[in-house]
Length: 425
Ligand code: TYD
Ligand code: MG
Image (cartoon, rainbow, N blue to C red; front, side, top):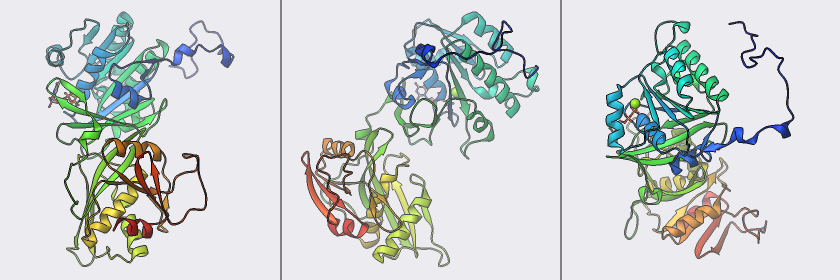
């Protein structure tokens, strides 16, 4: 096709601008997915005219999620489910298992783009599901499905269609364990939103948004895969190991903010003399190991705690990956506790960023974190000095340690790692 052909201007008219104030705001409206946990991750529902990529390893629950959305989405329009991998019978069996009874889902088992577009014109769905994008192909882009050319060509055709028809598009994409294969990665630029099912942990499924033109990218949805599909899990109860009495050395409770939600998670640290005298190792797959190395170096420098001759193991109970910066202070406390053998007192939750200079830096949402720890029965919080914007009485001249009472929680506000350690042990 000629690059300059006026495909969006069927009457051959010249492109025209319109006053911003005359734009129909309905164009940007959202469709509730019927799954509030997903709506939160998406930033408030499925944006019309948007394309959403759902990535994850085979068997993690992409097809299940798509079918559940198809059944629950708050639209009167029809939903077209394109299955290139499974037969109609197999999709039906999954639907029965999920207890889906609606008759507004149209199913079409094909991977051929021309067949999909023909059905699209006939059905004119509000939501289009493609499962999976790797099975799409067209003669226009070479015969082999799954090549980058095919992926890009077919996806952009469908993206154009939903944009022109006020619909929304979900594309399921397989991603291998080794990481993001090149295929779906190239699609990230074409779509508006990218959701990834992270590495599984038993029946828990973490759905993280890594790109979102219409919302925040820090949100994480937490589900449990049950007999009847993905169910929303109460995060407060998932990650906290209830313990009686004193904690074992190396355990700290972190109050982290993943997206807009505060979570309490248990950080576990273990240090053992390095197996190789030439090199110590950091083993941590729930918290970025670069972050762990940096915190260990900061402790070594500012507290004189020798860690460079130790192998360090870090785990987060419950299998969730923590990316939020507020995990740094609890991580430092867990490492200190592991190395020295001193347990951290129970019922104290910790949050804060740690600078290379050993300062405890403020983190966002302190009040939200404190409310959460309170609701879970903790009575102390160790963290940075409160942001004057967050509390009314903000004084800039605080001592290295300040004790305050906020809504019944004792807040130990510290300026640096030395005073944090002093107030804990
Ligand atoms: P599926 O959605 O097919 O994964 P994907 O499309 O990402 O490959 O999920 C498959 C797994 O989920 C399979 O092991 C069966 C399990 N499952 C349940 O446990 N409960 C259910 O209700 C469904 C539909 C699937
Ligand atoms: Mg599938």
